[in-house]
Image (tube, one colour):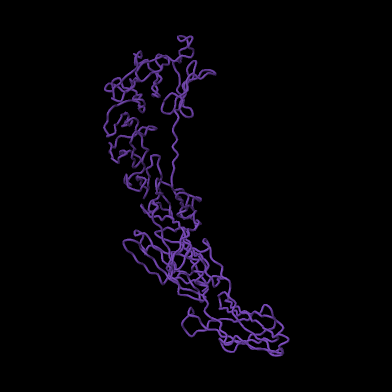
Length: 609
């Protein structure tokens, strides 16, 4: 009843398993590049053309352009053959523009709904539906705070040399500040920033507010009239790092590339400095994380490895999406967090080896969208050889199944009591390689011979010897044929030396024991099949010597098998039993070892020892 005791202990343990995710392509790997833009859209390139997708791989803008500008004021410029051909808004609506319009250098973006453009020698503004709303001008600047700085023609019909500086508001009306009366005396105007701009009028510097009032810029509040910043007649606006410098007689004025005021300083004193408003930095949090080095990267989802290192590059996107480079081509994957391959070996029943090899069925149950003919199982265990010619595929609307025969080699040191053994598999499918999955199966070495003694009781005198004979008889677990396995049979006598085993026939053996000066003698019949661990059958000979006063000289000898003590298996040592699911878990799962829950169950057992 030893086997029944072991199986009963097995039934006390059921295991909590964890599952990993599986990936599928939402955009096939056919693109030359995929780049994540600041607004979360994806710029995709193919055949030297570029388009846009959303974060889930849905086409937003067809791949038809040489380049696409950044979105500003909800618009992005489109270019072909180094020319602007239109722009697209955040809803995907495309506006085609006059081919003669070209964006102004360093101003190739919409600002507050208007785009500076150039046609021939003249400058204009376009609105978001592509209409020309203002112009022609001699110079233009982008809109800020509702105004744009422009250079206006006095009378373009008469000549193009007479111009003056002014502001144009967002209704395309020319306007200037109060107190700034003569156009010819305005020598400089800046773009607005934080509701104010700088104007040089009659060689003096003024602040212009967005309500179009003016105030002189002074260096000494105690002497405002005498400390107004003023300029020489031929002052210079010189380019410097990050923008421009304009030197006054008593101060330096710094402007950025958009001609917005950055700083005003005198000798040793900063009169004004623009303070950049604090920007809320939103850290981009993704459940998907790339790991590894460029050229060999993998994917983690919520800190669990779901795709080992196999990609050239990985760009995490929102949710369960990622852009990946595979074999020099880019695509977009989506992780399926609700499904996982389910592996079964030997139909989740424990394995009893009675020979060097055991053939078991290996199956992988796959989500319905993953066809079995697109998948392959690979073994990562040396003692499991998948028989590729046995491949069988079954597809249905719920789950698809891929099945192979596996030739399992008997594990080293496998005993004749149940113990756990792990097999490692991975799935190749649709260009992916999964994490390693561990299938844990309880197994034991089933005795394929029993040792039977024709006679187990003897009588021996001091000078006699006895001949102990035994037969090897195939068990029900042995193969049902006439084959004698390639085996060796040994006699082990730990308490005596020189006892020889004689082979009478292939399955009949004997040895002789003499002498009565002992109480017992143990011996072991050890049977070893080639490539298998040995099976030992222990016996004990008990010698009963007669009492001295009895006058008898014969000694009685009884040979009995030694029953090995059976250790009760404890939860945690065994993961499953016959009829119960085995442990099938990804090797990389972080919670692969959880405490086992104790749940009594019943299992019919028809093996006895």
